[in-house]
Structure formats: C-alpha cells, structure tokens
Amino acid sequence: MAARAHALDRLIGAELPRFGTLADVQAFEAQAAYADRIAARSTYEALQLGAALDPAAPAISFLPNADPGENAQTLNHEQFLRRVTQAANLFHSLGLGRDGAVSLLLPLLPQAFVALLGAQAVGVANPVNPMLSAGQIADILRAAGTRVLVTVGPAAGADIWGKVNAIRRQLPGLKSVLVVGGRANAETVADDFDAQVDSQPATQLSSGRLPASDETAGYFHTGGTTGTPKLVRHSHANQVSQAWALRLMGLAEPGSSILFGLPLFHVGGALTQGLATLANGGHIVVLSAAGWREPRAVRNVWALVQRYRPRVFGAVPTVLAAALQVPRDGCDTSSLRYVSGGGSAIPVAVIRAYQQQFGLPVLEVYGMTETSSVHAMGYPDMPCPAGSVGSPLPYSRTRVVKLDADGRLLGDCATNEIGVVAMAGPGVFGGYLSEAHNRDAFVEPGWVDSGDLGRLDEHGNLWITGRAKDLVIRGAHNIDPAPLEELLYRHPAVALAALVGQPDAYAGELPVAYVQLKPGATVLPAELIDYLREHTPERAAVPVALHFVDPMPLTAVGKIFKPALRVDAMKRAAGHLLQGLTDGGDPLHVEVASDATHGHLIRVTLGASQGAERARLTAAVHERLAPLTVRHEVA
Image 1 (cartoon, rainbow, N blue to C red):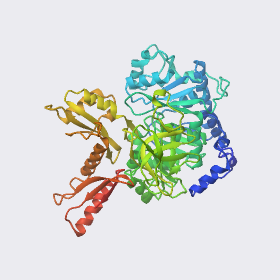
Image 2: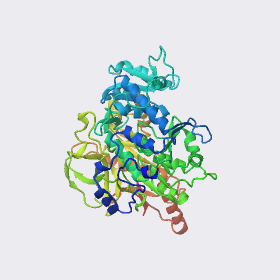
Image 3: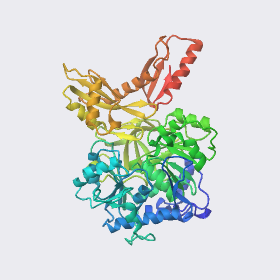
Image 4: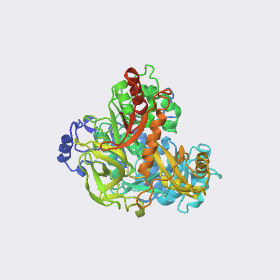
C-alpha cells in the first residue's frame, strides 16, 4: 500500500518530498510539469484513487451528537464510492447533463457529501448556505440554473423546508426536488433521496462518461450573504489541485482522521477538508449536522481527539480559540502533529498558545473561494513567523501589486511594500458564472485580485495587512456592506452611512455602522440598529454598534473615506478592551497609526506610573490586546 499512498501524484513514490526552503519547492517544480503529475482528471476519479488505497477503511463517520462515546454511522471507502456512483446515476436519470446544476440545501449529513460528489460526477454541484433567507436562496438557484434540488424534508428540517416551499414556484427551471430524512408525500411533492439512490446501479456511471479536467465541477456562492449572487465556477482541475496539494503538504493522509465541522457550502469544508481527505484515503468524522456550531462539538473536542486520533486539528480561528478554553482533563492528544486554521486571520496570541500549551506548530492557511481554498500556507518543514500566511503551494504564485484608481495594474511592489495581493496557479478559477462579475476580477489574465492588502518579506513570506475591498469577515461569514448602507440611506434621518469591520477577539471582525444625520434629525443609534435588524434577513450582518459622526470623512471627490472609519473602529475596539485597567488612575492613551510593515498598529501610551505598576500595566495591555489580529505596541 505504501507505493500507492500518493495516488493523486503519479510521479511520487513511497515518500513525500520535504520542503525546508523555497529552493526545495523550486527544485520539485523543475522535476516535472504540473499537468504531468496529476493522476485524476475529475473529482470522481480522485475518489476512486482514494478508495483504492484501502477500500475497507472508514471514509465517513457521522456523530449525531458530537459525542465521542456514541456509535457512529460509518461508511467505508468502497461503500461511499458506491453511494456516490448511485447518486450520480440518479441525477443522470433525472436528465442532468454536464452543465446541469444540482443545488444542495443540507446540513452536515452523510447524504450531503454523497450528493455533492455525485452531482459533480455528471454535472455541476451548487452547495448553498441553508441559513440564508428564502429570497437569497432563490436568487442563487436562479443564477445557477438549478435543475435538481436536494434538501431536507419537513420532518428533518422544518425551517429549511419552509424556505424551499416558499421559493420552488419561483424557479421554473427546477425539475426535481429530493428530500433527505422526510418521506415523500402529497405535502412535500418531492422524492425521497435515499430511496431513489438505492434504486440506482452502484458499480459504474450510467452516463458512460467521466468529466474532463476543464469541465465545471461546482458553483460556490461568494461575495457576502447580501447583495447580487456571485457564483465562482470551479473546474474539476481546480478542485483536484486542492486535494493534491494538501496531500503534498502532509495535511491529508491515508488512514488519518479529521474532525469535520465546516459547512459544505464553504470551500474549506467541501475541498480542503472534504475532498482532500476522501481522495487521499482518509477518514472524515462529522461532528453533528450543525458541525462546530453544535456546542458539544467544542466542549468534547479533546475527548474526540483522543477517540479518533487525528494528526491535524483544523478549524476556523474562532473554533481554535474556543478549544483553548476547554480543559483537557487528561485526554490523550498525542496524535496531533499540526494545528491549522484559515478563513480569517489567526490571532498571534492563539498561535503562541498552541505552541506553548501543546508544543504544536500552527500552520496558517490563506486563500479564497476563487483559488479553490488554500493557496498559500506555512509549510510544515519551513520556518514561518507567527502572523504570516507563509508561501504559495507548489506550482502556485503570489504577487503584491500596485493598481491605479481604476484597478489597472501599474507593476509589482518592492519587498515589504504593501499592495494588493494577486494569485495564480492550478487552483485559481477561470471566472465567475456571470460575465458581469468578471470585469474587475483579475489584475491581468490568470491573476485573481484577492481584494486583500499585503506584503512579501525578504524570505518570500506573505503577510496580510488589511483589505482593499469593503467586505467584512465575521468569523468565516462574509458580509457585503452595500445592502446595509442602502437600507440606512432609506431612513428619513440618515444623510450619509457606511459599514466597516471592527476588530474582535473572537470573530476577527464585527460589523459597525457610521452615520451622519440630516440637519435637525434626531434618532437613537439603537433605533437605527433595530431598523436594520427588521429589514436585514441575516443576523450576522446587523451591526453590533452604530456611531454618529459629523462630518463624515470624505475623499477629495466626495466619497466616504472608509479607511478613516476603520481606524476609528480599531481605536474603539482597543479602548473597550482596555477599560478599567487603571482603576481610575492615569488614563491610557490609545491611537492607531499607519505602519509600513503591518498596515496599522495600535499604539498604547501609559500615563505617569512607574516601576512595578508600569510593568503590571504593560503586561495587562499585551494580554488584553493580543487576541486581536491588528498588531499593537506599548509606547
């Protein structure tokens, strides 16, 4: 089996290469062209290769209550591949072709993995966030041209089914609705997914064809939970590259388990942890239908590590931080070799806590839906300073560039000069489904504009210093400010409005609003927040605070100058965290300054205290501000 352990790469033998320096990566790339390495043309072929490593090994185990002691519902790799094949044949029997879309509105059930990968074997999979409003879901399904919808029936998910019932008549292209966990009847006017899958052949694809590498595998919604749907179009080659790269990095390994709690409508769940694990013969342990949102998943995390022996603890930064608060109580966590996180920046304090308490390296990853998830990361065997997101994956490239006011490329930035991060490589998508969204997507052909600001240091490490685009990232939840701002402008008391992200120790960022009132108008901040809550379908998008400003900072051409508001939000966040520190003594002075290395720096100036008191205050400031992703110093 050892010789087949790298089945996705047809050129690697029994041992993975070790990348200790960037020169090692370059030498590896020089050995062969990327296209000559990849053994799978499609995600279905990648699953076949993964299952062939050990067909009897577990592929997916489902823990309904995220309890390490409960009996898991388990499919081995042979059983899972057969189930995926049956799902693909079901979709084919419903008339799905290579460009037909199957949309999924499902929690983290085993059937969600089956439907996702089965859809890709014959057509296009479109996993959708079931927590969105019915109207937003309808917009996404229309944009995708959905022909088949797989969801949960009224008995298993009344809230989701209520949304489906509300919108299905708005979707003339929708031909079939399949339900999981709810019997088909006159009320649902839908077919039982499991029963229909059972009726299909399991040994080969009825379509008689395998998808080609350049065919579309998936549509993933991005650009926030509000606003016009923007669907990223992934090819099979894009998605397979993620599974290949994660194996090369040692984060997906035959026979190794992963605690799985990320949603499948997010590329981190579907590709980085889902496809990469299955295509490399690994074992997905699904922590309830709600994933990490189930409180017991975090509460039981170390007992789950002891039970399932994962090598990698991978999650979004909020989960990594929450897990640190869970007592280990003697649980054996010795199987862990790495901690990995992405979706938003990992606070340096969290990184250092894992290094100190567990003795584990923390591999921060960086990417986006448009790069099929991970594009750069801290390499396991390559030095990477805390706070950096490391180097591009093999055969991938990262640049930091200068753009003019119209988004045109002016050139590359110098070492340690902050600019816009652009990325190219096998994971980078070819464009959005709608051509209207492609106008500003690339800085030049093949190089996607990340919308992030960053710098490349003298060792080739990428540092993310801010955001050029307006998106607010709350945990891994993307929030587009524009629709919230439009709602505020409709209020009769509002003259100017803006929404920005405020640093937060838990969520990374929280949305906060700034408003300039019309002359003579009177309204309370709480009233405006209630107004937004009433008219905004997504709770996560509602600002946690609203501040009145007069005058609103404007550019020379009269546009709202959001960088000034972000600086104010940083200052307010730091001030809030430092409240009560001096117990009525000398006040602390907080300011936020531009910084050539980090983008922004919170600078805290102490009062007249001296000696031990000054040392105490300095230590306390560091402790309180360390969880923020914005750097700080005590002056």
